[in-house]
Length: 427
Ligand code: HAM
Image 1: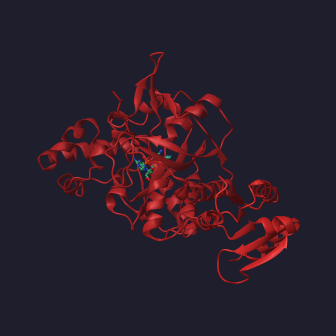
Image 2: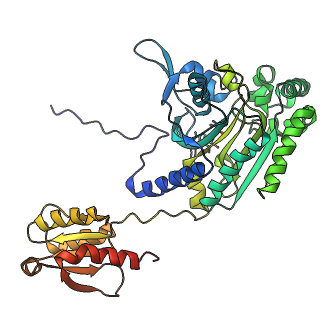
């Protein structure tokens, strides 16, 4: 009996990135790397999986830790997890390697959260981000916010809203959490039942709720701004002054809290007004002065952000910006003499830095011309029996009617294509 072959698809909440879309993806990563390098950040890679304990420090009350962690026991019975974000790994790496400060690092890679998938919300998603460890200076907060703003502007995104808030230092945060908890207890009947259990365990998490009933209550709740210490107010003031001076517009949103527990002082989020609310967060971050210590390192302040690549490209679609660069080859060699000419010519062209492709399988002239057309190549380099005998090639312009076709010596084809490339550089 014939066994039935099972057909597989990508797991729910994951995507294949196919070559057609990869050009734009790479271009965005290159934009990010360029901006990060301009500001003297160095790249960091860390493992895709770490000991689960590293990520527990993101906050026992957060969805990321309690519901969304891809954790598993490895074959040595160690509790491991696929990374849901990078900040904890960067702090773990800092504690492990003790680099000199300020330590400015940037990253790009896949992250994993077991979320309910929808447009712009995936189980494997990709972030670019940057972190600065070792300085309390509010100008450092400005440095990371400005980097994010420059990247978004570089991608051509215009409809962004930068919202900022301050959670203050540990003392401010503690006093605010207590006042908020008392208020929520007094108004418990009006809080959505699904949010009530958070009131005792993690009152700040209630501010995250998207449920209408809860939001009506939290709109009247005490605000963190009223609980900031003088030092925290001064820090936040200097951050705002820095943004003003760099002409980065922002809105202070006193109810902004973020889905991770490690933040103190500055919090920020870039929201796209071109996307619907559930997927409008292009990126966000803030200060996390206690995280390195919580991971066994010395007391070390830190601040950073991450942005979702999928989200940003969705916003680019919505704003019709950041179109994919042309990835077509410059030349497509069509050879109906047996394939040897195509083989040798493509490599000669590539040696000169001219991108070139060809057809295989000794196909007909018609089929090869069709393949040349489909490849999007600017020029077809045709070698038929006559050309081969005369030591020439026919050069055909595949885009437009100017200078449609002419014969040139085979030995000149590389330099001629380089000349044409330079002449068309501004097209
Ligand atoms: P986050 O807000 O959890 O922060 O994620 C940052 C960005 O990653 C989000 O704004 C969103 O664009 C994207 N993102 C998050 N989850 C998903 C998902 N399931 N599907 C698609 N995109 C997603 C952090 O991760 C912090 N580590 C940021 C940070 C760095 N804070 C300080 N330093």
